[in-house]
Length: 434
Ligand code: KIV
Ligand code: ZN
Image (cartoon, rainbow, N blue to C red; front, side, top):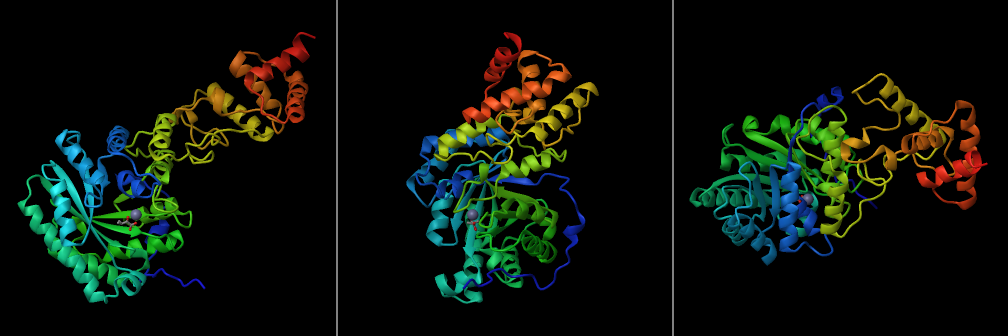
């Protein structure tokens, strides 16, 4: 029933396989206010978008796609508000999306009139499925839509004041024959004639993630090696997450030659979402690479995100979920407690604690309330850790097993997690006030 919809490139070199990590952060572009917003049950109000924009700036984003101004009054007014209220910092570039249609392009330019700098992001769909079923046009006709759009952008940018640059997305790129996708991008580039001083962005979307991450990497590598004006082009990725592999797809895409990533906080976006920039950035951080983004107060970012989007962050969401630093089971607790003690004893700066991929403190979490948590699965190491960490009570080694057993017994009977206070009370009732 399910036809294979992706296209392997005619030549694959797999050079990216030889690299084991990303050593430099890509340019980040947040599309929370556009792709994220367009997928919400209730899109954000103008005031919410303004507040979300300020959050993105605070987190360190230098490129922010603010919307699709021709799509609605709110979108248009939001662009105008940012510009007229001088809310765009000098080092931040706003980006606006437009279809390759004359009246939409014109309205988009009207929306950004007066912006000190802006990227106009042009797209049209190029995949086999869209060409045949939606547009009923052949390859030449689809290419013409992109080229005509590119020409109009070029014309209007010359008349505009402010620093306007361009981005082109062959939408549904991954469902397109790779030689044809490159042909369309090159035709657009021939119109824009970028130079290293005036670069343009070619954005390659996995509009629907329909293949394994290494297939995407091969596709990106093919474009990277075959696109014209390569030193004047920023290759950007725009992964969605339909197969649950958006992060892997983006990471392999960067290894394969991409310079930039478009994504959202916590992966909000159409269907299963856009790629989650927080996970990508924190993955790099845990490899010692400065992402340029600041996620040191994750609980506050999470609170703002939940308020703006009306959605919840999942308990096991990497780096941010309620439970992602918690160990309930005895063997994990024992290893963490020993790792923490080792770190203290050796005065280590480097993070090597077992079972914790990063130091929870780096994302605004605490050891006291987030790491060792006690239930019926817990062990003596965890109970001793809680008593020591929270109340300065050091259990003699010989007592640990009995105390641990007594505490977990209560949790088993009550079928509940025990707070540190409850653990202390059980300890005192059974071993102190006896
Ligand atoms: O997913 C997609 O293809 C898009 C384009 C408009 C870039 O959002
Ligand atoms: Zn998208």
